[in-house]
Length: 266
Image (cartoon, rainbow, N blue to C red; front, side, top):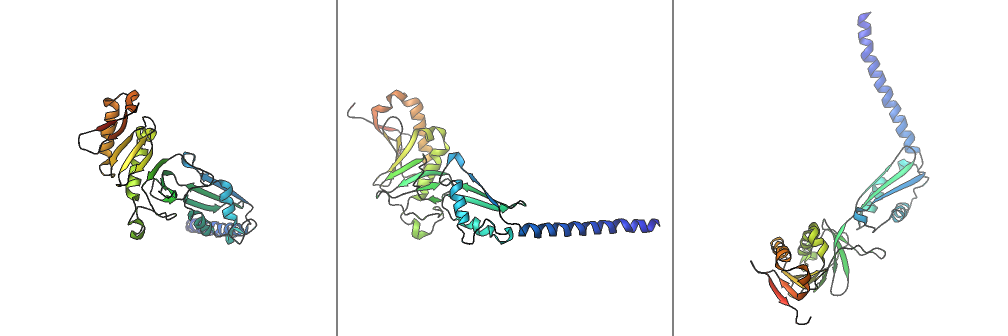
Protein backbone atom coordinates (compact mmCIF):
# COMPACT_ATOMS: atom_id res chain seq x y z
CA UNK A 1 0.00 0.00 0.00
CA UNK A 2 2.80 2.38 0.91
CA UNK A 3 4.52 1.59 -2.38
CA UNK A 4 1.30 2.38 -4.27
CA UNK A 5 1.06 5.75 -2.52
CA UNK A 6 4.65 6.58 -3.50
CA UNK A 7 3.82 5.84 -7.13
CA UNK A 8 0.59 7.82 -6.96
CA UNK A 9 2.28 11.12 -6.04
CA UNK A 10 4.43 11.49 -9.18
CA UNK A 11 1.52 10.29 -11.31
CA UNK A 12 -0.70 12.98 -9.83
CA UNK A 13 2.02 15.57 -10.51
CA UNK A 14 2.29 14.48 -14.16
CA UNK A 15 -1.50 14.53 -14.63
CA UNK A 16 -1.70 17.94 -12.98
CA UNK A 17 0.98 19.33 -15.28
CA UNK A 18 -0.81 17.94 -18.33
CA UNK A 19 -4.02 19.53 -17.11
CA UNK A 20 -2.35 22.93 -16.75
CA UNK A 21 -0.83 22.68 -20.24
CA UNK A 22 -4.19 21.73 -21.76
CA UNK A 23 -5.90 24.57 -19.93
CA UNK A 24 -3.29 27.08 -21.08
CA UNK A 25 -3.62 25.84 -24.64
CA UNK A 26 -7.37 26.32 -24.47
CA UNK A 27 -6.97 29.84 -23.09
CA UNK A 28 -4.44 30.67 -25.82
CA UNK A 29 -6.71 29.39 -28.59
CA UNK A 30 -9.63 31.29 -27.10
CA UNK A 31 -7.61 34.50 -26.84
CA UNK A 32 -6.45 34.14 -30.46
CA UNK A 33 -10.10 34.16 -31.56
CA UNK A 34 -11.01 37.15 -29.41
CA UNK A 35 -11.61 40.28 -31.56
CA UNK A 36 -9.65 43.50 -31.13
CA UNK A 37 -12.01 45.89 -29.39
CA UNK A 38 -9.75 48.86 -28.60
CA UNK A 39 -6.35 50.37 -29.35
CA UNK A 40 -4.27 51.86 -26.57
CA UNK A 41 -1.43 54.10 -27.79
CA UNK A 42 1.45 55.36 -25.65
CA UNK A 43 4.00 57.73 -27.21
CA UNK A 44 7.27 58.16 -25.33
CA UNK A 45 8.32 61.78 -25.92
CA UNK A 46 11.78 62.41 -24.44
CA UNK A 47 12.19 66.02 -23.30
CA UNK A 48 8.79 66.94 -24.73
CA UNK A 49 9.56 65.97 -28.34
CA UNK A 50 6.34 66.08 -30.41
CA UNK A 51 7.12 64.90 -33.93
CA UNK A 52 4.25 62.41 -33.71
CA UNK A 53 1.29 62.08 -31.35
CA UNK A 54 -1.04 59.28 -30.29
CA UNK A 55 -3.66 60.23 -32.89
CA UNK A 56 -1.16 59.95 -35.74
CA UNK A 57 0.10 56.60 -34.44
CA UNK A 58 -3.44 55.28 -34.18
CA UNK A 59 -4.18 56.41 -37.72
CA UNK A 60 -1.11 54.60 -39.01
CA UNK A 61 -2.09 51.41 -37.17
CA UNK A 62 -5.58 51.52 -38.68
CA UNK A 63 -4.19 52.21 -42.17
CA UNK A 64 -2.89 48.69 -42.61
CA UNK A 65 -5.46 47.79 -45.26
CA UNK A 66 -7.11 44.78 -43.63
CA UNK A 67 -8.52 46.64 -40.65
CA UNK A 68 -7.74 46.04 -37.00
CA UNK A 69 -10.82 46.71 -34.88
CA UNK A 70 -13.07 43.65 -34.89
CA UNK A 71 -10.47 41.26 -36.27
CA UNK A 72 -9.42 38.22 -34.20
CA UNK A 73 -6.16 39.01 -32.44
CA UNK A 74 -4.58 35.93 -34.00
CA UNK A 75 -5.06 37.46 -37.47
CA UNK A 76 -3.48 40.82 -36.67
CA UNK A 77 0.12 40.96 -37.88
CA UNK A 78 1.81 42.63 -34.95
CA UNK A 79 5.28 42.59 -36.50
CA UNK A 80 3.96 44.29 -39.64
CA UNK A 81 2.47 47.11 -37.55
CA UNK A 82 5.74 47.48 -35.65
CA UNK A 83 7.60 47.61 -38.96
CA UNK A 84 5.41 50.43 -40.30
CA UNK A 85 5.98 52.43 -37.13
CA UNK A 86 9.73 51.84 -37.11
CA UNK A 87 9.90 53.01 -40.72
CA UNK A 88 9.01 56.51 -39.51
CA UNK A 89 12.20 58.57 -39.33
CA UNK A 90 11.09 60.17 -36.06
CA UNK A 91 10.54 56.80 -34.33
CA UNK A 92 13.43 54.97 -32.68
CA UNK A 93 11.45 51.92 -31.50
CA UNK A 94 7.96 50.46 -31.42
CA UNK A 95 6.26 47.57 -29.64
CA UNK A 96 2.80 46.16 -30.37
CA UNK A 97 1.02 43.47 -28.33
CA UNK A 98 -2.49 42.51 -27.21
CA UNK A 99 -3.99 41.43 -23.91
CA UNK A 100 -6.73 38.92 -23.03
CA UNK A 101 -9.37 41.68 -23.04
CA UNK A 102 -8.90 42.32 -26.76
CA UNK A 103 -7.00 45.60 -26.38
CA UNK A 104 -4.16 46.22 -28.83
CA UNK A 105 -1.35 48.06 -27.06
CA UNK A 106 0.96 50.23 -29.17
CA UNK A 107 4.07 51.79 -27.66
CA UNK A 108 6.21 54.21 -29.67
CA UNK A 109 9.44 55.94 -28.69
CA UNK A 110 10.42 59.11 -30.52
CA UNK A 111 13.93 60.09 -31.50
CA UNK A 112 15.55 63.04 -29.73
CA UNK A 113 17.09 65.49 -32.23
CA UNK A 114 20.10 67.46 -31.06
CA UNK A 115 20.95 69.52 -34.15
CA UNK A 116 19.25 70.96 -37.21
CA UNK A 117 21.29 71.27 -40.38
CA UNK A 118 20.18 74.07 -42.74
CA UNK A 119 21.87 74.00 -46.14
CA UNK A 120 22.72 77.02 -48.25
CA UNK A 121 19.68 76.28 -50.44
CA UNK A 122 17.41 76.37 -47.33
CA UNK A 123 16.76 72.60 -47.29
CA UNK A 124 17.13 71.17 -43.81
CA UNK A 125 16.96 68.10 -41.62
CA UNK A 126 17.63 67.02 -38.05
CA UNK A 127 20.15 64.57 -36.63
CA UNK A 128 19.37 62.76 -33.39
CA UNK A 129 21.88 61.97 -30.66
CA UNK A 130 22.51 58.50 -32.14
CA UNK A 131 23.27 59.84 -35.62
CA UNK A 132 19.96 59.15 -37.38
CA UNK A 133 18.55 61.69 -39.82
CA UNK A 134 15.04 63.12 -39.48
CA UNK A 135 13.01 65.40 -41.78
CA UNK A 136 11.57 68.67 -40.46
CA UNK A 137 7.98 68.66 -39.24
CA UNK A 138 5.22 70.94 -40.53
CA UNK A 139 3.72 71.19 -37.05
CA UNK A 140 6.61 71.01 -34.60
CA UNK A 141 9.97 72.77 -34.37
CA UNK A 142 12.19 71.64 -31.49
CA UNK A 143 14.64 74.10 -29.95
CA UNK A 144 17.98 72.55 -30.84
CA UNK A 145 21.40 73.65 -32.01
CA UNK A 146 21.26 75.02 -35.58
CA UNK A 147 24.13 74.63 -38.07
CA UNK A 148 24.02 76.91 -41.13
CA UNK A 149 26.42 78.40 -43.66
CA UNK A 150 28.34 76.92 -46.59
CA UNK A 151 26.62 73.55 -46.50
CA UNK A 152 25.08 71.23 -49.08
CA UNK A 153 24.43 68.19 -46.89
CA UNK A 154 22.43 65.44 -48.63
CA UNK A 155 19.46 64.10 -46.73
CA UNK A 156 18.59 60.41 -46.71
CA UNK A 157 15.47 60.05 -44.57
CA UNK A 158 15.83 57.57 -41.74
CA UNK A 159 19.45 56.70 -42.57
CA UNK A 160 22.22 56.54 -40.01
CA UNK A 161 24.57 59.28 -41.18
CA UNK A 162 27.64 57.99 -39.37
CA UNK A 163 27.44 54.59 -41.04
CA UNK A 164 25.98 55.76 -44.35
CA UNK A 165 27.35 54.54 -47.65
CA UNK A 166 30.24 56.33 -49.32
CA UNK A 167 27.89 57.60 -52.03
CA UNK A 168 26.03 59.61 -49.37
CA UNK A 169 29.00 60.72 -47.29
CA UNK A 170 31.62 61.67 -49.85
CA UNK A 171 30.83 65.40 -49.66
CA UNK A 172 29.25 65.70 -46.22
CA UNK A 173 30.28 67.06 -42.84
CA UNK A 174 27.96 64.73 -40.93
CA UNK A 175 30.62 63.27 -38.63
CA UNK A 176 31.95 66.68 -37.60
CA UNK A 177 28.50 68.20 -37.17
CA UNK A 178 27.32 65.30 -35.01
CA UNK A 179 30.49 65.41 -32.88
CA UNK A 180 30.11 69.17 -32.42
CA UNK A 181 26.43 68.85 -31.48
CA UNK A 182 27.10 66.04 -29.02
CA UNK A 183 29.90 68.04 -27.38
CA UNK A 184 27.83 71.20 -27.02
CA UNK A 185 24.63 69.54 -25.81
CA UNK A 186 26.47 67.35 -23.30
CA UNK A 187 27.84 70.39 -21.44
CA UNK A 188 25.23 72.50 -19.57
CA UNK A 189 27.36 75.65 -20.01
CA UNK A 190 27.72 75.34 -23.78
CA UNK A 191 24.20 74.05 -24.24
CA UNK A 192 22.86 77.19 -22.57
CA UNK A 193 25.23 79.55 -24.36
CA UNK A 194 25.50 78.30 -27.95
CA UNK A 195 22.42 78.02 -30.15
CA UNK A 196 23.92 78.46 -33.63
CA UNK A 197 26.99 77.34 -35.55
CA UNK A 198 28.07 78.72 -38.92
CA UNK A 199 30.20 76.77 -41.41
CA UNK A 200 32.51 79.12 -43.31
CA UNK A 201 33.43 78.87 -46.98
CA UNK A 202 36.71 77.31 -45.81
CA UNK A 203 34.78 74.55 -44.06
CA UNK A 204 35.51 75.67 -40.49
CA UNK A 205 33.05 76.09 -37.63
CA UNK A 206 32.19 79.37 -35.94
CA UNK A 207 30.05 79.37 -32.80
CA UNK A 208 27.45 82.11 -32.24
CA UNK A 209 26.75 82.64 -28.50
CA UNK A 210 23.32 83.77 -27.31
CA UNK A 211 24.97 86.74 -25.56
CA UNK A 212 27.87 88.87 -26.69
CA UNK A 213 27.15 88.75 -30.42
CA UNK A 214 30.67 87.67 -31.38
CA UNK A 215 31.74 84.74 -33.51
CA UNK A 216 34.00 82.11 -31.99
CA UNK A 217 36.29 80.32 -34.44
CA UNK A 218 36.92 76.71 -33.37
CA UNK A 219 38.36 75.28 -36.59
CA UNK A 220 37.38 72.21 -38.56
CA UNK A 221 36.08 70.24 -35.59
CA UNK A 222 39.32 68.52 -34.60
CA UNK A 223 40.62 68.92 -31.04
CA UNK A 224 37.25 70.42 -30.19
CA UNK A 225 37.15 69.48 -26.49
CA UNK A 226 40.49 71.15 -25.78
CA UNK A 227 39.53 74.30 -27.68
CA UNK A 228 36.22 74.61 -25.87
CA UNK A 229 37.92 74.07 -22.51
CA UNK A 230 40.28 76.92 -23.35
CA UNK A 231 37.35 79.10 -24.39
CA UNK A 232 35.47 78.35 -21.16
CA UNK A 233 38.52 79.33 -19.11
CA UNK A 234 38.78 82.56 -21.11
CA UNK A 235 35.12 83.37 -20.47
CA UNK A 236 35.54 82.63 -16.76
CA UNK A 237 38.83 84.44 -16.14
CA UNK A 238 39.73 86.50 -19.20
CA UNK A 239 36.82 88.90 -19.47
CA UNK A 240 33.82 89.78 -17.31
CA UNK A 241 30.48 88.86 -18.86
CA UNK A 242 29.59 92.54 -19.18
CA UNK A 243 32.58 93.02 -21.53
CA UNK A 244 31.74 90.19 -23.94
CA UNK A 245 30.16 92.65 -26.39
CA UNK A 246 33.49 94.41 -26.87
CA UNK A 247 34.68 91.64 -29.16
CA UNK A 248 33.47 90.86 -32.65
CA UNK A 249 35.49 87.66 -32.94
CA UNK A 250 37.26 85.19 -30.65
CA UNK A 251 39.66 82.66 -32.14
CA UNK A 252 40.69 79.55 -30.19
CA UNK A 253 42.21 77.58 -33.08
CA UNK A 254 45.80 78.21 -32.03
CA UNK A 255 47.67 76.33 -29.33
CA UNK A 256 47.80 78.12 -25.96
CA UNK A 257 46.28 81.27 -27.43
CA UNK A 258 42.96 83.07 -27.50
CA UNK A 259 42.96 85.78 -30.16
CA UNK A 260 40.29 88.46 -29.81
CA UNK A 261 39.24 91.08 -32.33
CA UNK A 262 37.54 94.15 -30.90
CA UNK A 263 34.55 95.75 -32.52
CA UNK A 264 35.30 98.79 -34.64
CA UNK A 265 32.02 100.47 -33.61
CA UNK A 266 30.38 100.62 -30.16
